[in-house]
Image 1 (tube, rainbow, N blue to C red):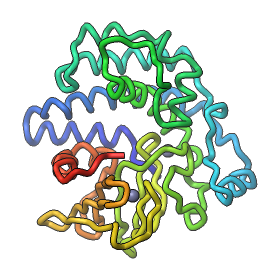
Image 2 (spheres, rainbow, N blue to C red):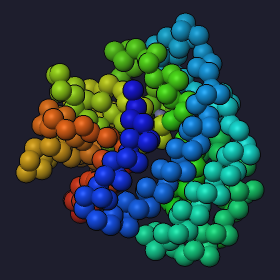
Image 3 (tube, rainbow, N blue to C red):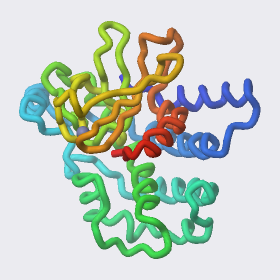
Image 4 (cartoon, rainbow, N blue to C red):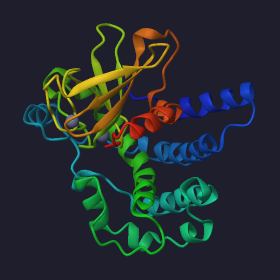
Length: 280
Ligand SMILES: [Zn+2]
Ligand SMILES: [Zn+2]
């Protein structure tokens, strides 16, 4: 089961009371989580799995994710208000993104939440080539859309995750939403590798000796580095020049909240990029 957003909120509150004020990027993340948690609570009681067990198995066997864009039950008024709240959180921390409050505050839900824009984002994992936004980097717009859509995707994913036959999927994209992984963990039982969806936080089983981005299995292209404590691994692929941050659950008895590990390991991103590798 994916980590509950409220557990991450509690983790950050405890961290704050133990260590004092959180760094700016964690404060930003904390505020975003509050917005996303409210939306998840609103949606959870209303959503149904929507697919029969048979339909789920059929899609899993043929590599089709369980939710297509048209099957996402998007509540547009809620989506619009979520966008406004998310935008305000980004605007309040604009300096983290080399932007300004005014520029971010000027973004309009009317242009960014157009059905076709979101459909393109969902299916291609990027925004349409021509998106009518001035003065804000496209990468940042992408992050705002991502953060807005996130609670909708996680709420849908939670209804479906238990029905996935993990042994039958094993693909480089998410079985629920088709998103790419941006983190991974090695499990305590056998050190099997589980990928974490960057969009809906679903985890799925994937071969350790294969790159999930370009699918190469050539061992000359694949390697990893570990940190001093052996807790983290940075998997790199020389073929597609991308990397994947990974935590080894066998190395700790503490509870791991995977979604927040993305933010606690930013040094690994820096290292990977210095070595010439890109995030997916
Ligand atoms: Zn997903
Ligand atoms: Zn690769």
